[in-house]
Length: 129
Image 1 (cartoon, rainbow, N blue to C red):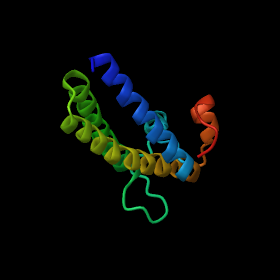
Image 2: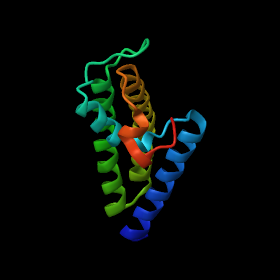
Image 3: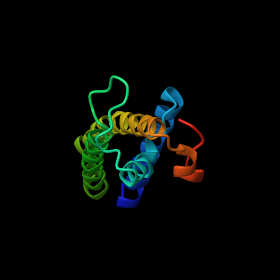
């Protein structure tokens, strides 16, 4: 399998997982960065919502860390292939998606609690988490 085909395989798999997560949990984990920008814009990094242990900033930082690991795993699988690299990619994705979903949920609630219009903040990127 060539690099382009391996990348396409990883991309299709990742897209399916993200869509399934959103369908099951109602959270668009794929919108992590737009939510992170909104949290940063309104200086809500230290905002805790509900009974969450993490602040909005901590949750976003954790998800971004998993995202970096995911990118490394995709690169390794795409360039070299192999079952071990595929499994490492799957594990990195399994770590990232729930962390991103949690970060989006916390960021969403932090923005709402602070009185911001989430739809206006994110524009056409979202329907509603």
